[in-house]
Length: 76
Image (cartoon, rainbow, N blue to C red; front, side, top):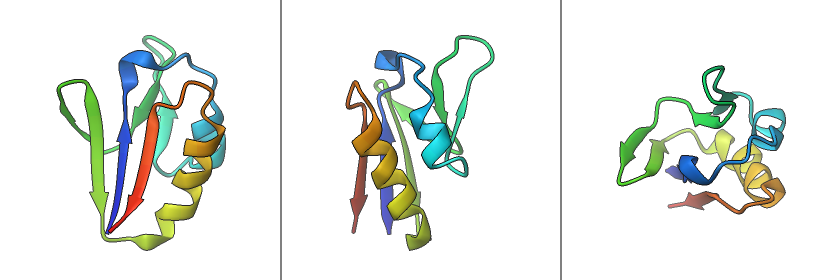
């Protein structure tokens, strides 16, 4: 199980997450911030839980590339 979390309000719109994990992230045309696709929002945290372990590595790379460190990726 892969758990990915995004603190969207802190996003600066650098686009690194979309470049590294386009299956999970896209940029909003409304405000230019990252969107974690199919996520559930709770108290400012957008989270997905996926049984597909193949998304772990691209999301981990997106986490490492994020200049404001608002992405977390965990393998459970």
